[in-house]
Amino acid sequence: MALNSSVMGWFKSVAHKYLAIIVFLIAWQIFPTIGLVNEIFIPTPTTILAEIWKLTLDGTLPNDAVISLFRVGVGFGIALLVALPLGFLLGGFFKSFEKAVNPLLQLLSQANPFTLFPIFIVFLGIGEVSKISIIYWVCQWPILLNTITGISNVDPVLIKMARSSGLSKAEIFTKVLIPASLPTVFTGIRMGAAFSFFMLIGAEMLGSSAGLGYLIMQAQMVMQIPRMWAGIVVVALIGYIVTYSLIYLERRGSVWKQEV
Amino acid sequence: MNLNLSNFNENTKIIKGHDNISEVKEELAVNGKEITGPPKIRIDNVKKIFKTKNNKTSKIEDFIALNDVNLDIYKGEFLVVLGPSGCGKSTLLDILGGLSPASEGEVKIDDNVITEPGLDRGIVFQQYALLPWRNALKNVTFPLENNKKDAESEEIARKYLALVGLSSFEDRYPHELSGGMKQRVAIARALAIDPEILLMDEPFAAVDAQTRAILQEDLLKITENTKKTVIFITHSIDEAVFLADRVAVMTARPGTIKEIVNIPFSRHHRIATDFKNNSDFISLRRRVWDLLKEEVIKSQEITEKRIKFEENENIDGGGI
Ligand SMILES: Nc1ncnc2c1ncn2[C@@H]1O[C@H](COP(=O)(O)OP(=O)(O)O)[C@@H](O)[C@H]1O
Ligand SMILES: [Mg+2]
Image 1: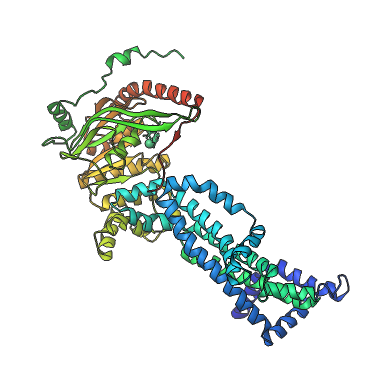
Image 2: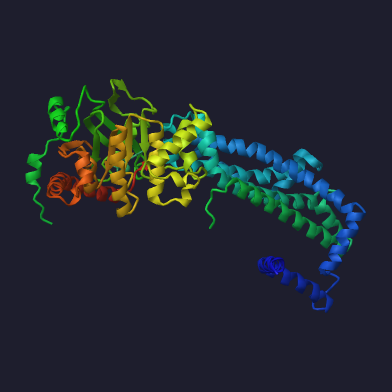
């Protein structure tokens, strides 16, 4: 039957694509069950799912997730608002200034954010401001540096062509430089999003009384191992969803790009 | 190698001033071109100096790319500029396009000195310069969008895509087109603004030989029918002799016009007969090669010297 075979085909393609993940999950389920690893420290996926369900129903997970997403959203959002325009301006209009400050930017971007966090706390206190600031600080660099690189690497012949077509500087910026640099800029945005989750969890573990990082840390300290794993899995899932949403957006915005 | 260059040196005339206009008119009449009025484009003692930084000494040095270029181009003429690579051909075209200023001298179009790009000049670049995020149609409408409504731009773009034989490819993105097709789109885009002058910088250098021969014929037909004044740059002698009404041969860097060779055959003759295998073509080719040979050797020597002294770094900033 046609329907049946197409369903089978779909099933096969999905199975093929996620084969490694499926095998991994099955092994994870079996190993603790047969005692190959200690179930106390590595609970089975089903135990973790049950824990996630329980924590969702009693409001713990939604509550902490909202707090964490708020911090990431604000920090990442500010980074987008600051680093994108700054990168476009530095790369497009103030090239010689950009060349002068680039080594400094590289240096700052290399500073380990976990060592910087105490400084942020000294200046901004232990509250929301320091956590959002450190997230902003960390994820602005890939966005800024990639935007500058993207703009700088636009093929000069495209700019020549646009000038000879009678476009003004502002029009060249919006109609050539921005679209041409978009793939590189998007890579920076994706890296920024990934960095923001790293920093979020780090900041929440180091100094916080709510959020997913706090939930994981707290559970570990009182040896509520399934609870800890529930937090870890939820963080991983959110990161996965965010990354793939960004990739989806990127694909939609660049249908013209050659698939390799 | 024992090359006897002395004969060529005697015959060579470096063009210091402008040609005698009436002589040129007579020459072009043979090509079936009737010249009325003064030159359309007048290149007058153009010199171009780049400031470069020597990587070793960190000193800023003058790098003379063009020196004393004088050239007149007449309305409706197909003039090919032929020179060894690195002699300043693209630099000259940039100046004509208003994309970069001459350090000395000036270029006039109809008595107006060029200071900036303008829609009276359409440019075709060697690297196609297509926008990869726009399909063929939208690439051709690109220079029209400022002055015209979308529907009107698209109508014009369709017309020119048809002219270059790409009607059925308007939805294709550049990565879905072959090199020859990309260059056709670029030609359609340059023509779409209906410029009086077409500036072409080695447009067919990157396409394969068969495609190139077809593109050359099509270009001759199109420019003849649309009555454009064309300045076409190449380093291929065959291409120069086949396309040109006149070939301006350049010297090695610093580039200047060495001599202008008239090609006394009409475009129709060049297309309709098997011109490239004809003895006239072969003797013209021979003559042009005699002029060019010495410059190619010189330019190779210059390049070798430059490699020895390490590349100088371009200090012009990027951006817009
Ligand atoms: N912006 C620039 N700065 C410094 N040197 C340049 C610049 N543009 C071109 N040149 C140099 O000028 C010479 C002529 O270049 P070009 O006009 O591109 O040659 P062609 O097109 O004849 O091959 C080359 O030696 C090239 O390296
Ligand atoms: Mg060139």
